[in-house]
Length: 183
Ligand code: ATP
Ligand code: MG
Image 1 (tube, rainbow, N blue to C red):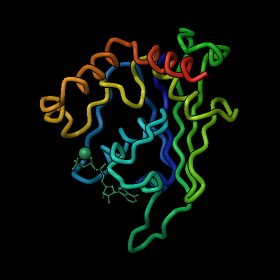
Image 2 (spheres, rainbow, N blue to C red; image 1 turned 90 degrees about the vertical axis):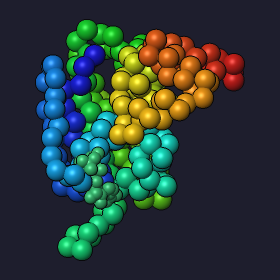
Image 3 (cartoon, helix red, strand yellow; image 1 turned 180 degrees about the horizontal axis):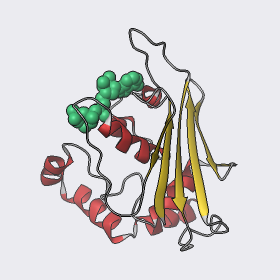
Image 4 (cartoon, helix red, strand yellow; image 1 turned 90 degrees about the horizontal axis):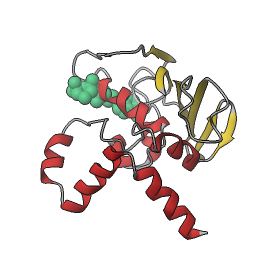
């Protein structure tokens, strides 16, 4: 599976619809301070099911919605869509009948998040599981936040173990076991 396209609409500083094509190989995002580079990475995490406001540098989940500026009003919703090439058919069962997966997450103020995969309503957990085994998920160590290196150095052993498990690609198994135990 690999990412091919990211679209943002009303997400943080990306108030106008913005589309990025992600080609194979290395992609660089450059720009002056405050132009939205970190916001892009956060959009990627968010559409994969990130639910911790702190990981979005906010205090509540609605903080990802464009908050308005002196010249433009706030938006009522934010939407991020991620296209994934699944021609290698490595997506988990249930998502594996198509070469392309379009994952969409939309948040409306006071109404929470809604997710879709290829236009079909799904739960947050479905999207999280979709990426959990691919080691690219919302909590993946492959996505290193600004300031995270120093956090890693200072992490307690338990937190560091979670990072290693994620890197080893077994956190999806843990989630499934947890779900099985709840049943
Ligand atoms: P640096 O190079 O300093 O790391 P950056 O390119 O990573 O900068 P970001 O942190 O992605 O920049 O973007 C910060 C900008 O996004 C700020 O101008 C901030 O006001 C704006 N921003 C964040 N959240 C929102 C929001 N909900 N509504 C409007 N603007 C927002
Ligand atoms: Mg930044």
